[in-house]
Length: 296
Image (cartoon, rainbow, N blue to C red; front, side):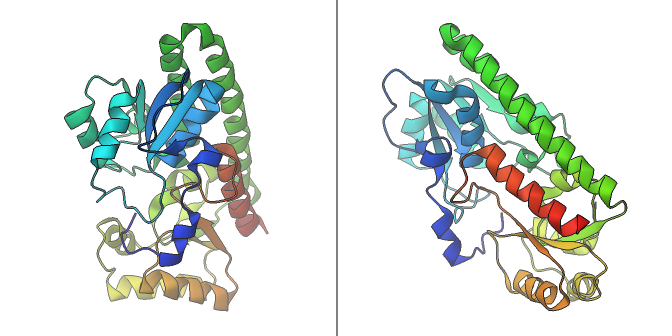
């Protein structure tokens, strides 16, 4: 996530309790398995599998906090030491968490979602938008939690199976987007939803120079800005996919161009926004928004 964030988006924060956990620093709930996640998205996956048997805490639940530059605190260290299991994204997205583990929790069993994805290091790290990877994480969680609490293993397995089934439905829905409108293309302000677009069979037509600059957190070249803006103004794309948690003068300009041209804007996020009940609810809303924009 680019650190130049919309100030008002802070209102989306502090939703993990409703979507699968608590803030870091609170003592573990008695009789429950304490699990720590790097972000509240992964915390919500833990909650879906662990149900009432887990006490999930996320280090980051505030969308104004950038995982790339976040500095862990003593409270985070205590949270990790109290955990029986740790889940993080990996792939360079939340390196603060791997550092935290190295310094304070090497003995805590860990799951790295990116490692389970089978993707090569250096490729797009936003694997919580890769639904097959999220299924692998859920299955691994069921296995690990079952080893911690064998008497609840069958429940964890059943929860993961139910969760996987909902993700299969989402995968089918996403794949239907490309079948309904073959050859559809969009542009993105940031490649956060890269894997969702891939599943949907929707081409990302964003100029390479623009995407590279965004990934490196530098200003895109003027020529790249002009090129992506022309794609929007001339309605050569079905939608603008906008990372709602990042606003810069360039993304603001693109959103304005989309509005003027009548090009739909599909907002995506990196953390669970207010008003969603969990991972599936959140992802369903984003798949539906993409479908509505592309197939209308």
